[in-house]
Every structure is written in structure tokens, then in C-alpha cells.
Amino acid sequence: MTRFVIGPDVALHLALERPAVSDDHQLVAPTLLRSQVLSLLYQSVRRGDVTRADANRQLDYIRGLRIRLLGDRALQRTAWSLAEELGWDDTLDAEYVALARLQADAFVTLDAGLARSVQGLVTLAAPAALLMPA
Image (cartoon, rainbow, N blue to C red; front, side, top):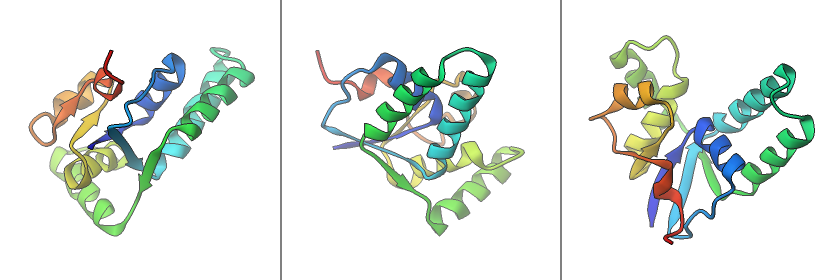
């Protein structure tokens, strides 16, 4: 079984595309994923990008994904250290990278800048790696 860390960008991408995620993979994320996804969808509704009903459908899809949410002390310590090492202003992205470093095989992100900044620190994968083989 391959363990992938996904961020809110990938969770929302999956909610829009609704692909079949392979049963051979386990999705993991920091506990903050839930709050970030909720906030991003709320902002989208406020901007008029999506309806509240569409946002609720996306939330339901994400809630239905088997994502193991983690947030222990070791993760927080590692995230803090990574944020310091990389000179980041906060630890949000660092939690995803720390989780990839500590407990996963790869980190999946759609954020090209984030991917560039952590290249070499963790293994990166494209969202297509999550899908069932054709």
C-alpha cells in the first residue's frame, strides 16, 4: 500500500473530478485539512464561484474519502523545524511536508511553487498517481 499526503488543493481537485482513487493507496493529511477545505469552499461561495449546494457536494465527497488525519507532537515539531529551515512565514504547508517526511511515501500537490520548494526534501507525486489503473 502506498501512502500519499494530500493537501486541500488536491482534495478539492478530487472533489471536482470525482475519480476513483485506488484501493491500493492510503490518503493521509494533517488534521488542519478539514478546516482548510471548509474555508476554501466558503470563500468560493462568497466570491460566487460555486453555489452553496455545489460546495456541500464537494464537502460530502471529501468527507467520503478515506483520509487518515494526523496531528501529533512529532508532526508539529517537524513542521516547525521545516518552516524554519525553509524560511516560511507559517507552518501550514510545513505540516503537509512534515507528514510526507514522517509517514508517507509521497506528497501530492498542485502548487508548483510549493513543489519546487520541497523538491529533494520529500518525494512528490502527481494527482494521477492516486487513481485506479485504467
